[in-house]
Length: 375
Image 1 (cartoon, one colour):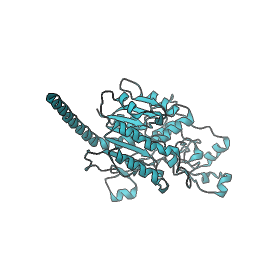
Image 2 (cartoon, helix red, strand yellow):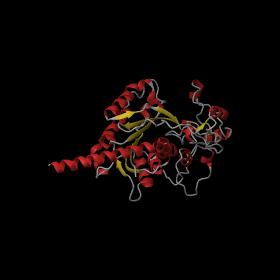
Image 3 (cartoon, one colour):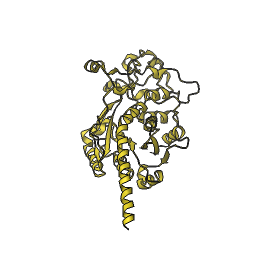
Image 4 (cartoon, helix red, strand yellow):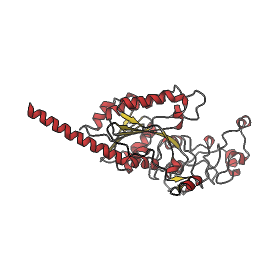
C-alpha cells in the first residue's frame, strides 16, 4: 500500500481524500485545537489510524518524526499539505501579508520533504500567493525544492467547479516530483471534466458544472452540525425581503452606513443560488456578513452541514469546537472530492516511484551482499 503524510492537516479533507484513493495516511500534523479534535474523532479510529502530532510544526523535529512513523525505513510516497494561507489572502490590501510569518511556513514544509523524501509532494494554497508582492517567497519555495532534489512544477490555479465540485473555488497547487521519477507522460493539472456553457461548446466532452442544490436537502435529526448563526430580528426581516435563490443585499433594501461611502461587496448578505455552483466556502462561510452565505430560501445563514456538503464532506463527518470553529475548519479544508481526483490522477506516478525504489533497494542489497563476501 502507498504511504502518505498530511502536514497542516486541518480537519482532514486531504487525509480523507487520500484514504479514499487507497493510500495509507501514516502521519498528520496540526496545531489548531478544534481541528485536532475533529481530525481525531473522525480519522483516528482503528489500528491503521494516522499518528496525529498536535504541535506547532516549527517545533517538531522532522527527522525524529520520520523515524517514529516509519521505524523500518519504509517509504513515504506522497506528502500533502496546505500551510496556513492568511498572509497570501486576496483580501489583504496593498502590502499587507508580505512579511506575515505564516507565509514562511511553506518553507518549514521542506524540512519534512528532506526528512521523509516522498516520491511526490502536493501543496495547496490560495491564488494570492502568486501575486507579485509574494514573488520572493514563491521563488524561495522553488529553489528549496530544487535543492531538496525535486522537479517542482510551476504553480497552477485549479477551479473546483471544473472537476465536478459544486463550488466556485480557485486554489493554487504546487507539485514536486523527486528526481529520477519519469513524469514525461504526466498531464498536470488533470484536464477538466466539467465546464461552463461556452467551454462545452468548444469541448463537447465536458459535463456541465454541478449545482449545489443537494447541499440543502434536510439533515438528519441528530446532526450536531445542523446549526446556523442566530440573527437579529432586523436581519431576519432583511433576509425575508431578499428574493429566493440568489437575491442580493440591494434587493433587501438594507443599507449600512459603510455602504453609503463604499458600495462594493455586493455579495454580502446575499442568498446562495442553488441552481449554480456555490460561492467559495471561506473560514467565515456560516456568517452572512462575510459573503453570499444566506440560505437559498430560509431566512438565516447556511448551516455547518450545508457548508460541509458544498466542500464534499460526507454527512457522517462531524466538525467539533462549536459553530464558529466548525465553520473555520470547513472553509480551510481541501474539498474532499477535489483532493481525491488530484491524488488518483497521480497514482500511476506514485506507483512508478515505488517501483524505482524497490529496484534501488534490490541493487543496494546486492551491493551489500557482495561487499560482505569480499570482506
